[in-house]
Image 1 (spheres, rainbow, N blue to C red):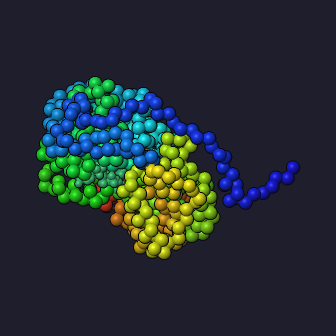
Image 2: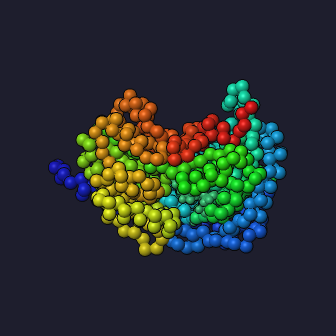
Length: 490
Ligand code: NAP
Ligand code: MG
């Protein structure tokens, strides 16, 4: 029997109509209003100000949270300071037991956490279910293992905890960033005051409930909600000994200035504009998957997103053809649907920022490609977007867009690839696609990026340190290195 040959474009369109497969939300209880988690319980705030957190896919209000003021933050820091006396003196194996307990409860309540994360932030349920929540649990597991081995982690040094850690996190991976912050701090014997982002406070408040369930000693973890002002109160509080911040380079610089000369320890995990580099000997189909995962995962709200694709000139044409076909198969829509690839943009403000930058790309002369894609009427959405004809000077090649937008540039030689990859004020991550191991090592040695992925992208593991060069910040999270910012080594 003869098999009719179809054009690739036609084949790609041959996607099945999927029936809706929404994750159920009956098992999730979101309170209409929340207090603050201070001293081991939810307390009524001093501040009278509250603000709503919404579901960006529907614009519906989910709950109201407190905008913590100076008195509230002081209350939280004092609770953490008081708890530090006992927590830091606790037998390390007992400390480990509490942290193990936190990770076990995260696993037990994974479905609930995944749904809340998706509703509050707009990310596809398959990502919160398969990436965010399991990685958050893995992070607690990993650092629980270190809690009673600190003296072996740093040979001939005596590790001592610092005191209260003030931690401020962004909205793109709310629970995972919380885990990156809280797990190493607790394992090292510190106590914490954490402020989640304004648009995604709910998983942190659910984590407060998990701390209570784990019977974590009161005050070891405190959670204060609020906006930038609350964040600034946390990091500048005089009793906070160590500040850990993840967010934009702009706010990172403000914090670095505010903390200069105070003697507080500081780590900053900031923005990025990573190069994902594809050589002509790379397996193209695998590279296409890596490119898609690099920039369209979590709607591109990823600090280490592969937002600049550098492709070797000789394969640019076939690679882009494959990539465009693949974009046409991505499903955009209800984040709670298990088949959704691209969810909602986290907030109206972020959507406007993406739109403005994309417009600048068109104006500066780049060629835009967007697959046919129907956007839901309510909520905040942006289709997967690809720009060709991009010059290095364009804003879309220089600035962090933090959305599902890829800028494609080409190169001829490995040296040119390195030069273009490093031509950015950032330095968080990079990707290299090639068949040659020696070339991977050659490239990795020359790129000024904290992480270099080889023939993969956006892979995370709690054992592996993560952090930036240049304006992407300093300090490492994850691995043994991730303990150091929380310890004094005497
Ligand atoms: P952002 O505006 O810097 O906010 C981050 C956090 O800081 C939020 O909780 C924010 O509160 C708070 N904040 C704002 N102003 C503050 C101030 N003056 N003092 C103290 N805290 C303040 O960043 P974003 O837009 O939420 O997050 C996106 C950025 O984070 C991107 O640039 C991305 O690259 C970066 N990021 C980096 C990493 C990494 O590991 N390197 C990971 C994830 C994200 P509000 O929510 O109320 O604004
Ligand atoms: Mg929200």
